[in-house]
Structure formats: structure tokens, C-alpha cells
Amino acid sequence: MNRFTLIWRNLWRKPIRTVFTMLAVLVVFFLFTVLEGLRIALSLSDVGIEAQERLLTSHKVSLIMMLPAAYQSRIARLPGVAAVSHGTWFGGRYQDNPEFAQYPVVAEEYLALNPEIKLSSAQRQAWLANRGGAIVGRPVASQYGWEVGDRVPLRSSIWTRNNGSNVWEFDIEGIFDDTDAGMNAGVVLFHYDYFDEARAFGKGTVGWYVSKGDGSMPIENLMASIDAEFENSPAETKTNTEAAFAQEYAQQFGNIGLIVTLILSAVVFMILLVTGHTMAQSVRERIHEMGVLKTLGFTSGSIFRLTVLEGLLLILPVGILAMALGRAALAFVSGAMGAMFPAGLHVGTQSVVLGLALMLAVSLGSVLPPVIRALKLDIVALLRTA
Amino acid sequence: MATQLIQLTGVSKNYRKGRETVRVLDGISLGIDKGDFVGLMGPSGSGKTTLLNLLGGLDKPTEGLVEVDGRVISALSPGALAKWRSSNIGFIFQFYNLLPVLTAARNVALPLLLTSLPASRRKQHVNTALQLVGLTERASHYPRELSGGQEQRVAIARAIVSDPPILLCDEPTGDLDRSTADEIMDLLQRLNRDYGKTIVMVTHDPRAASFAHRVLHLDKGELGAPPEETPGAPGGTSP
Image 1 (cartoon, rainbow over the protein chains, first blue to last red):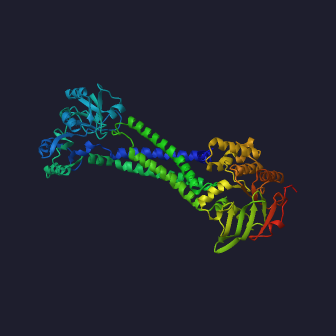
Image 2: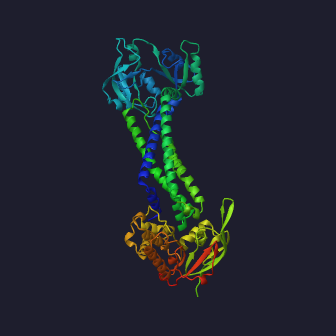
Image 3: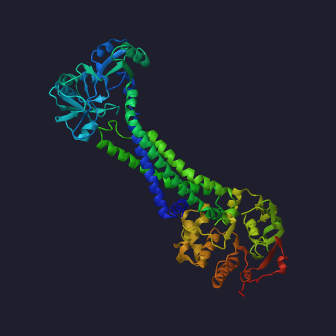
């Protein structure tokens, strides 16, 4: 018998209540972790440093409106611009799966501007050599089971071919990793020349330009100078960092994400209240026993520590287990739906710390008020309680 | 010559009841010798339990001094008082006050958690205490699995496990039938006679009081008669 035995036995005073409380804690922190993962994925808040330095220029009115291909050379000539390339939304889907990102690009330019795309030199060469070739982000390849050498058909919701078909076939020449886990992580890249030649309309246009400054001027000035270049033209532009663009893009899911987050937060909050109430009730039931312990010579401080430790023991291990399960679930979903969540579903240190803080808050918030109230009473009053 | 262990000098205790101040004890002066067995009787509300609480350092007097073994305990801080209680006082309550989540042995071991004894010595002490109250075979039983008499024996084992010189008993037989009450009183008498424990026992039961060396009567917060004039049944033979 030691003090831990006392804490442990008190914890299991009413086993069914303890088990249900632990289950509630498990559900709360599992949901919390999954929610955090979704929130981060939908907000694209952890895009890498490359995306914060790269500029993205799109049509001022909307991303779906095209820009002339001739803008590339005009942007390239602007002072402060080191490199420029472009991409276009293809809007393809594989079989009956949801639409995901594919861009026709100028291969060498695009790879130079996106150093976070890691592709073996053999696969790079193979892609450059094959006009109908494509490279694929690993999450997409994993989800659809694609391998190098496969020929895959993509059905575009926008672009029809010269022959009237909207099915485009590509040879998978490489599978790349994105070290930034950013916007490129879950895309299919293929050759713009092949695309432009084969599409039935919109020839000579691109969806957006990607550029990078040479560091000679602040990034805000460079953005302003690009947009000024096309002011009062038929296709005015809007330039932003790729990271900011990603945030805007994410806002199309943002409302759904916000609604889901609000509903689940309410659920989490309610379960937390119920859990906290149960824990507080468990402490209140023992006020008389606190009087007995004080009679035996336990100080208020030692009873306080025993009760607080019991509260922590009830919440922390289960909460940590729940967060580990939540992370495992996110990893599983991330693997199974790589195209939908190209940057992956994960929670970072900040979320883990937030989760731990929440556990401490629930634990202490439910235990402290009744125990402090009880210990303020003198022993005689404590012993009088039923 | 007997050594005085407990000395109360002019002890009064007031309680606030709403706006009213109720005087529960009024200028009590009392000496209790080491090895004495004192019965404390009186009608309900006469202040018996309050006096017992003051002796055990559970409460502080409004006026006066409570001295135990030459130390004024009424002047100690709550922390010092708790420490003093753990090594000097064993409490025995009417309703046993065992923790329901602990077995008999663990209940008995509770006061030893406040000592620096190693686990093996603590276990030894617990076994000795349980042996003394005749409950070794019930060591692993929970309070709900014990009879009232057995629960009170466990409570007594808990009270003596850290070998305090004073036992304070508040109606120790109040919840027991006659034969079980006698067993408990025999046990307390043995602790007094064979182990030299000084016992102060609050009781309503004249039969239990007859086990005491002397009986004090408390009425309306005052001791009714000098202890010498209200002797109990020295030697403790059951009536």
C-alpha cells in the first residue's frame, strides 16, 4: 500500500463510471485530433517556405479565366523577376473518383521553379523525352495504385481533345515526392505543348503564371509591378504568393470545413462538460472521506495532491492514447485519399500541445473547484457531511 | 505517581449559528493522566464530541488552552497539528469511517503512509495491528464484506497501527449490538491495560462507560461533577 494505491483505488471507486468517463475522454480527444488534422489540411496552413516565396499570377476576375501565353515573356522581362513559368487547371478525374489536381506545365521551367519536387534523374529524363508522359505525386500514385510505366486515362471536365473526346491518356514516367508537402504533393504534371496542341479550344492560353523574384526588391513591390504591367489590358492580373493563393483556394472548402469544425467542436465541448461534471461529482462524493484523511493526519496539501493526481490519471493516459489513435486514423485516411489531401492529414506539435493543454484544463477544471471548496472546510465540518 | 498527559485549562468553545453565538463548552478545566481510561457522558448537544475534537486537535478552542504531553496543541498551525495528530492520536468513530475502496489491511495502513517507514515495515505493523484486533484472516476483505463489529475492529487497528499514546473514541459501540459492543469494549480495555493507551471515550451507553476508570458528565458545556465523584467501573468488569 502506497499513495499511488490510494489514488488508483479511488479512481476505480465506481468502475462503470470510470470506464464511461474514460470512453468519453477517448472520443473527445480522438475527435479533437481528427478535427485538427482536417482543419490544417483544409486551411493549407502549413504550406512550405518555397510556396511563401513563389508568386502566382492569375486572371484578376477569376482563376477559371485564362491568360494569354504571351504574358510569360512580359513577366520575365520585368525587373526583379528571376524565373517564370505557368500552369493550367486540367480538371480531370480517374475512373469514378473525385476530381483532383493535374497541371499541364513546361517541364524544365516548372521543375526549376519548384525545387521541392524530388524526382530521380532517370525518371526526369524519361518524362522530358516523352511528350505524352506525366509525373505523379506519391500520394496520388499510392491512392490509385499507379506505377511507372502505366498508361492512365484521365477524363477532363473542362478540356476536350481535337477529336472531341475528353479522355486524355498519359504514360506515367515518374513518381515524385514533395519535400514541402505543399500544393504540388498530390498533382499530376504533364507537358503543356502536348496539351495545347491536342486541346480543341483555348490554345495559346494558360491558367496562371508562377514566378520567383531575384531578391532585388521586396516581394510586395514585385507583385505590384507584375499587376501594373497588365493594368487596363483585356486580361488584368492578380498576383499573390503561392501560399496566400493556397489559402484562398482552400476557402472553397473552408465553409464546409468551418461547419464541420463548429459542429464537432460543439460535440467535443458538450462531452467535455459531461466528463468534467462526472469528475467533479466523484470528488464531491468523497468530501467526508477527506475529513477522515485529515483526521488521520493527512494535510490539506497532501489530499489536494492526491485528488489532482487522480484527475490527471483519469484524463491524461486516455487522452494521449486517443490522440495517438487520432493520428493513426489521419495517417490511414491520408494514405487512402492521397489525391484529396495531397499535403497529407496530420497534426503538428502545436496541436499536440493544444490537446495536452485541453486535457490539463478539463482535469484541473473539474477537480480543483470541489477539492478547494472541501479543503477550505474544517475537519469537523468535513466529517459532518454525509 | 501518575503523569498527567492531557491538561485543559479554561477551555470554551463558541459556534456561530446564523447571527447567534452558541457557547458549546464553557470554561472546562480537566486533567487526564497517562494510562487513564475516561468515559465522557452527557445528553445530546452537551458538548461531548466538541470536547473530544478539541483533545484530538480537530478543532481549536475559542478560549483556553489544550495541552498534551506539555505541548499547547491549541496554538499549533494546521500543518503542525496534522503531523502531531498522526503520531499522537488514534481516532475511533461510531460509524467506523473506513474508506470503502480499500481492503481492511489497506485501511489499517493509511496512517502509516504519513510515516517514513519502508513498505516491509508498514506491512509488519499492519499485520500486528490486525492480529491484535483478531482480524488477520479478514485482511483482504473490503468494509462492505465485514460486519459492524469487524469494521469497528479494523477502525481500532487503524487507530493503533502507528502506536499513538492516546485513543479518542466517539461512541465506539453506538452502532453495535450488545455482545459485539462488549467485544469492542474488551478490546479497548485490553489496549488500555496491556498497552498503556490513554483512552477518552464519548458514549451514551452506561454499560460501555462502566469499562472506563472514571466517567465525566458534561451538561450544557460544563463538567457536572468532579471526576473523583463519578467513578466508573475500574477494572472494567461488565455489569
